Length: 115
Image (cartoon, rainbow, N blue to C red; front, side, top):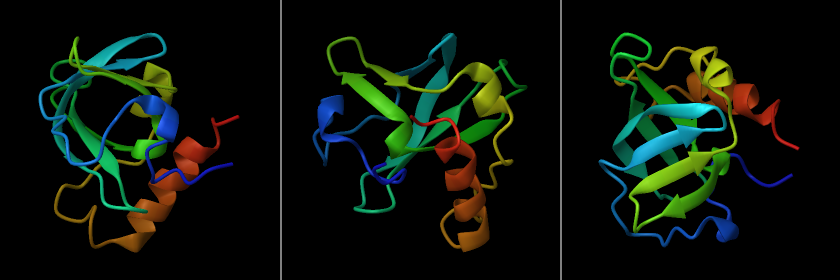
């Protein structure tokens, strides 16, 4: 299994590109738009603003959940269901970079669903 915190080479994403504003599609529908992202090696992620879907919350998605980036359509496809995303550890925008425990919990949560 590859690293959950890295973009897979098959996604079509090129490091350094901006994904802010791209729509994010789970396997069973849209979950929101990218509010922030990082393509730092070993620590890449998306922060997605879910809008009204889960009451205006933000969710943290490790880059390893991304299956495809469609730059022309400005859409990102992830290999998670809405339920899996909703059940992820709560995102704390002030701690996600500094709290290694939160990062570990989030990575473990999404790693469970990878094949």
